[in-house]
Image 1 (cartoon, rainbow, N blue to C red):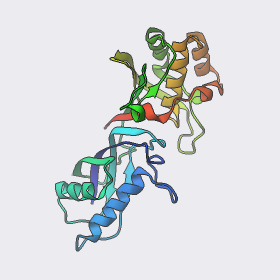
Image 2 (cartoon, one colour; image 1 turned 120 degrees about the vertical axis):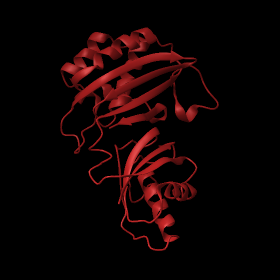
Image 3 (cartoon, rainbow, N blue to C red; image 1 turned 135 degrees about the horizontal axis):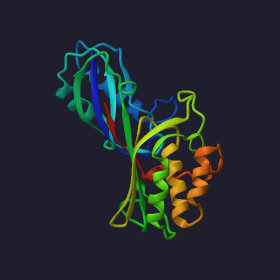
Image 4 (cartoon, one colour; image 1 turned 90 degrees about the vertical axis):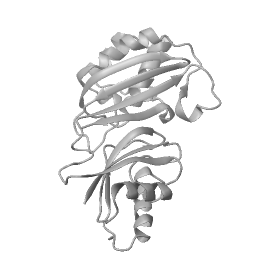
Length: 247
């Protein structure tokens, strides 16, 4: 039986999505919660497989992550959700569970993902875990114009780390937004898929442009020819959120 799961989490305490032997991860916590819930439910077997729409890095958050869960259970989806939330830590929360077909795959069935990054113009007592505070003055208009360079089908090799699961570095960026909201500069990006550290490097490069340290011409060159320079500008994970996955 396959279930589609929508969930949210604060990634601060975790080493990313993917289960690891010696680290706490989102996937690991959910699998553990399923096992605990099933140990209290007579008749459910031990076969459990959980796959996410993508692997968020250590410290990255999710407003809406999608996963699918394979297991055999007599529990109704809403009861299963209640039981899992009872077992999960407070910084991981299941939003919805529904039965789905075996043909649905959280990762392979997705047609696009959407991330947002939050940059704070001021020091904050409450939001430190959820923003990147930049002390320097930033020109958001310049940042917005540079962000437009990323729209379309481009080679983002300069903005990613090598990853065995993503042999091609070509990504189709469908939409970019950069706007201000109170003391925040918000960068939103929607694409077919994302490379490892891609959004954080794009954000870091835009921040350098906002500081006046990078020009649009230099950023264009990173798209035309591989450069290791963007790796030096990688933004911290604290401000990054997986916002939406579309199917």
